[in-house]
Length: 325
Image (cartoon, rainbow, N blue to C red; front, side):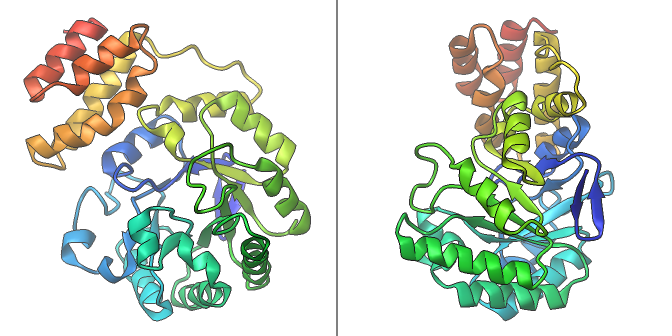
């Protein structure tokens, strides 16, 4: 199990917030394959109360969803606190404060991972958000802005102060911000983090693409849980597989071509209910590479699906490459 404040998940994992991906459609599929908690895409704190954001069915939790968290970006404590309160009132069950985003446009505006350079502001944001809501409050971090000793010192300072202030969980991606996704995530840092702060809930992130490897990293690091991000894009089966491994069962066989097609069609059907036709198709293309990794003729299937110019061509490609009618 995984305890996040007053909430308890029946397994030590959940789906991460993924900007431009984790809308209602992705969340719904993840939950159907075993994710006990999902997150909407990250939102700017100053935009959280805007009707175009708050009333967007792709973003806002729907009645048929269970636990959905909101992740927010910002650098002003009062605005972050107000956004958190608004999002909880809109139906979100948890708040995650993003101090990890490495996107250049975010860093230029001194948000996300840039704030690892300013421990005082990070902690003040957490304290004001914590006082504005009654739900669990998590913090998403990387292990430094860059690889300098000063940057690593800032990371440990933030961790120490957040732990002392009672953060409900620290979600840590063990790369620096400037490293982005290059090289390998340093899971030894997560093990060290848990040893130094045994009473703080530590959630790991980074390079989680295989259920057996994820289970092994949980075991060897001693951390409390993991959040799956890129590994879930076009692969909702990862949650089913991880549940099985953690229960001591064999990894389920890969989904058949028929099941793969069924999930893709269901995904597109959900997107078609959220977006205009052209946007739904563009949005679905983000997931095609992930879905096609399971196809025995991956490159050919991927090319056919990704070059589909409209819905009918997409359906025809799925019929051709997955043998469905």
